[in-house]
Amino acid sequence: MKDSELLQTLDALRSQTAETEIVEFKEAKNGFDFPRLGKYFSALSNEANLKGKPFAWLVFGVEDTRHEIVGSNYRPRRKDLNSLMREVAEKTINRITFMDIFEVNGFPEGRVIMFQIPAAPRGLPVSFDGHYYGREGESLVPLNLEEIERLRSQAVTSDWSMGVVDDATLDDLDETAIAKARENFKIKFPEKTAEVDGWDNIAFLNKARITIKGKITRAAILLLGKEESEHYLVSADAKIRWVLRTLDNQNKDYEIFSIPFLLAVDKVFGKIRNLKYRYLPDGTLFPNEVLRYEPFVIRESLNNAIAHQDYTKGGRINVIEVEDDHLIFSNLGSFIPGSVEKVIDSNAPEEHYRNKFLAMAMFNLNLVDTIGSGIIKMFHAQKNKFFPLPDYDVSNGKVTVTIIGKILDMEYARLLAQNPDLSLDDIMMLDKVQKKKTIAEDDIRYLRKRKFIEGRKNNYYLSYRVVKPTEDEALISEYVANKSFDDGYFKKLILEYIDKQGKTRRKAIDNFIMPKLSAVLSEKQKKEKVRNFLSSLRIKGKIICTSYGIWEVKS
Image 1: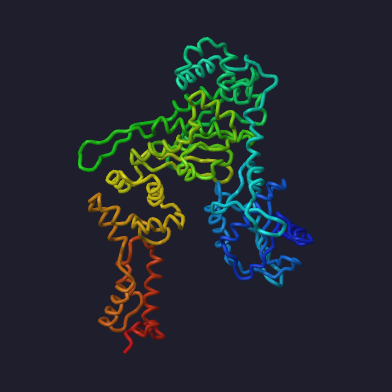
Image 2 (image 1 turned 45 degrees about the vertical axis):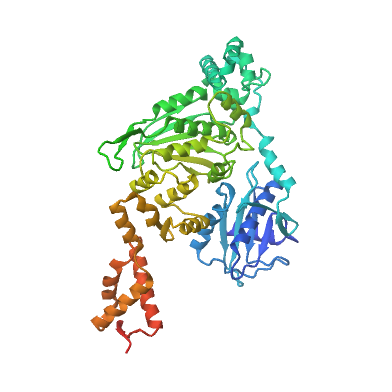
């Protein structure tokens, strides 16, 4: 948004006689409580949806009665404002965060900050830290039950996949796909095998809940339609694109598959080069040999993308194979459960589906598991091979699932092998440690309390208590190098060094101390550490620094 447009928008917001449910002004002259900011984010996002608006505004640096500009010094550095987007995403459902954060400068009173907040997605109320918020006039309040249900009902009343295609007939469906659907239905419901053989196609499709009273639905076209029947889907781009890439991100091959998706799944599966992967377990010279990807994991990821794609957005489902390394599956649309952690914790069927009719049809055809255990099975399949757990990115209006087909960290693999009783929750947190991913503060406290990790922010490592059972000398050595010693030890060492050396330059102190500091620290962090040690000793009157930058023990 251009500066002129920002000023016009700000003027329009300030010209309102009072705050509304989708506009909030705060002075925030020197700061603002983060949890309260998050509650306003949830409230304004939900209210924007309920009012049929695409977004809402939270404005800092403007008082909330007369709307006069007072200026805000909230997070004065731009990088701190940018990091706020990630901090909010970590606390919201589906990692929803600000559309943008604008700074308006040039006012004598100071800068104004304009937070543009997206409306909650259809059918998905936005929570912050597990709670839903809304507005009553100018007051921030918990979102009431009626509003929550009204938001959630949007998903129920707008099932695109259930729509009937008036002009389509049985002739628009692929006979091979129908035959395959019958086979799958028998596998899912073996007790009905004899009955199925006696049903004609219309009876079968009705009973499998793919058609409605003989009428062809969009779900039927997606799963069983002839390729030339795709035009019935209008807004949807019913395609699955497979791409093969090298490790340096160069495209090597690709293919695009159209409907019927029931047959396309097997074709995509056949393109993926699921080679054998070998690794040596501890204490043996004979390698384990496993497939890089469990077939169930590939099919579950792809079928989930088909079942939960937002077809109204006109995008394709993508399967990217990075050769001999990992697979990436992506589909458009928010992740309805909110987070994969919620799926793992609840271990129960989801209450709401974007394409409920399509999901039920795929369940009846033995393609997806709607009892809530499909994702959990994927996690266990990766865990049992000591491979990294599946990665779910549910930001930017799409769901991206990454499946790594190799051991990422041998020490992590040894840890799982030697500690078979670790819970899946514990393994999910430790998996983030091996991937050097951001870990929530609550998880950090939990891992520290159990002495599973040590180190500094962004440089956490497995603790000796967890590593010890592996009895791996190299790993223990790495732990010792990372652990280092406490600050008191280094201050004493510096004091003794200066005392013996006499007048000493800072560079000599750096060269003496920095190699002894923790291996997880960067060179810049090590220099900062030494500076802090020297400053502390100077303040305590133990050492002094002359005007020539020479350090000596205070007599």
